[in-house]
Length: 184
Length: 323
Image 1: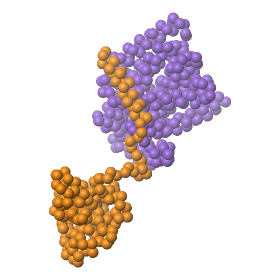
Image 2 (image 1 turned 180 degrees about the horizontal axis):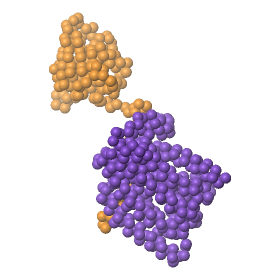
Image 3 (image 1 turned 90 degrees about the vertical axis):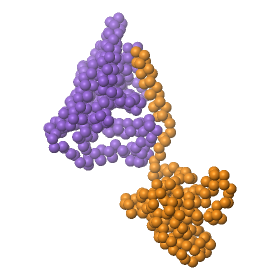
Image 4 (image 1 turned 60 degrees about the horizontal axis):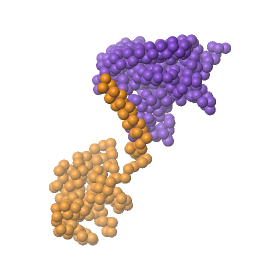
């Protein structure tokens, strides 16, 4: 009979819990109409190749570091030598730059190694498509994303190669400014 | 012209009841959402999904109606009707005002209970004719539950009938005039608790929704049904719950009685909704019982308790001479 008492007590306890929750604010939102702010260090977006707004030139120098570090091996870059850029970043370019977003696991390593902050993740919810081709990011699409980032700076992720290297260097106790590859 | 009056009233009652049943699904979804810190239906009928039931009905009507090859066709097609009609018939006996019931009868409570129990027939017909073992087991569970819980349910309802000295719902309501809220002293509350638990079990509401234990039985007796036939089972279930809420409001909560600033039928509907919300509250607070636990609760606790309660009520009637 002791169990009967605890059953009755537990029953009222359970109903009290649901009663309290009845008056709490809903934790869900009506998604397309209301959107939660995306966190500053969001790592779930799609990719962009940044463009220098001053000279309107792409920052990518085709160094292929992202291709080498990508664990999923989805980035492919071919290098082309060309004329020196106006902003003095370098004289090499990515002839082709493809990123197969379908297999991307958002590890952000490519962003971390990029010496010129050329590849970044966007702070937008990833584009949904109905086809696999829709997830294949060619260089043109990546640069398009980069152009929208100039128009909407809020969509840029906090993480760029420079910032991430500063973070990891600081946590390792390395003095700031040691990194030769980082642009000024 | 009394038949014309009855016909008009019955058409009104059925129309109102079916609309209510459609909107009960909306109420249930909104309240369930609140209990789970969600918002619930929102966009169909903008501010809070007011048109969601209509959209659901439209969707269900245009859905494909599949009749599996090996079913017993006559019973299979009859079962949804059998599930809805008895539940709606129950509304015929609930008095909205003195003399304002579709059927005014000295034994209206007994008739109500008889029709409420008939819902079982539709469910069992569905389970049997579907030619599906899950549906059959589900409907067998329903029979087991209903046969067991019918006893404490009836014994609990005997208490108000005994005290009012009548099976007439109007007289039972009139007997409650002047009595404190939630009925007769002491005995009535116990009786209401037993009745409420047995009602949950009879209308297959959680924690007694054993017939639709998804992990064991896929869904329920209506596994093989699609489209509007499937929807009719749901309508029947909600109509049944709402009708039983009406009985609870009438027998225990004073039916159409209430302060005079609102008319009687409004009080009745408000009380029915209150009982319905209580059912939902219980539904979203508890886990499903196992079948043997559910039956043990009935036979070991509710059944003896309701017998003792009935004896006490009889003693009260004899000593006070209330009847």
